[in-house]
Image 1 (cartoon, rainbow, N blue to C red):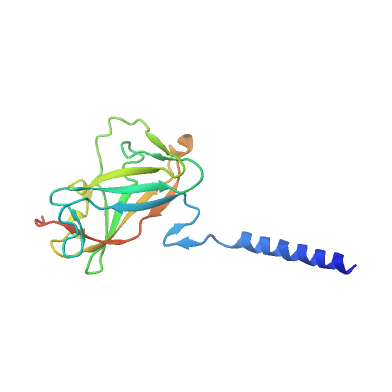
Image 2 (cartoon, rainbow, N blue to C red):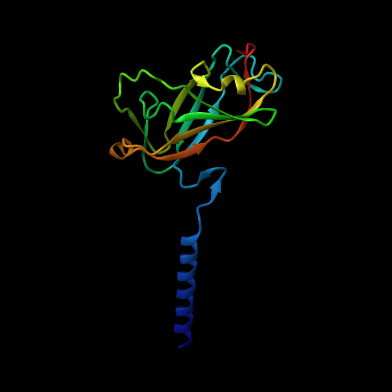
Length: 192
């Protein structure tokens, strides 16, 4: 009798703990929910003069290239729109917090000439990555507000796929992931 009471009490406690765990919200790290299949990171350019005065430099003046790496950390393949089509072109952006504390969103300028409206997707395998090659040129809005000759900014990359009419047909991932903010000098000697 006593043994059956203990078993019943144990079963009730187990059921309650499972129900409690099911009601909890996912744990967030930064602004990324742990359920996101991705991590995002900025890889600075490989320059002889890196770092400059202790800062990592992205030379917007010379349009030096750097990379943003989107890595699939899930155990399943995940599909995204490639940045060479209208549905993926605007998905990568940046947020910079200047030394004055101003937040500036760097995003690609409106691209008017989409002659090719084909849909290009890329399936990132488990543990695999998609690498964006980035050059801060005039095609990036608000670059002059985030860049400086001498003052670094906290920079983070943002990859966001918003819901649209093409995503359900192509089964692409919908969501947002951000890189860890890091200190960069977005270097420009000439400001318009």
